[in-house]
Length: 237
Image (tube, rainbow, N blue to C red; front, top):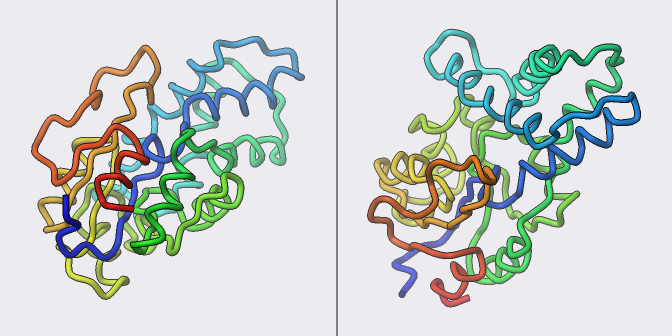
């Protein structure tokens, strides 16, 4: 397909570009097993991630002012540790474990695909992760972003329209010149409603055997792809 005037690609990151589930499980095990804890580490990751949307919804609904995702992650981490009856963690240890989200591994095709796309387009994040989190993750995983956009620049969380439109504005582009890329149907629907073009990238194992949705594109999107390399193929990169 032709690129239809697209000048920039912006990406959901958690789940689309990086494998948060196994990364967080590994980090939790490395941090907590030396203390004698033997847990289902994937379940730990799932429960921590499960608090993600409810925490952001308090901000989106006006129940609290905008705070960075790092702060929400820490609040959620403290709850998860209580859920698993984990005690005796220092503030330094809590901070290190909370920053597991800064050290997530890319999916095997992500870096190669992004490097191909970067040759033709501006590429950037459109994530609920805060800027420091995204920058540190990029350094850790060699993600070649041109720009970090998303929740913190917009001071609100996806799928609020302001999140997408602030990114478009900061790029000095029209919504139709920006392609939103994600593994999540709802994210793409929200971006498409604001005039961005949309690309679905399948990540059917994001949630492991517990995944219940987003196995495939459930709506019409401009591009429907199997992975990042397939997206690069379809965009002629």
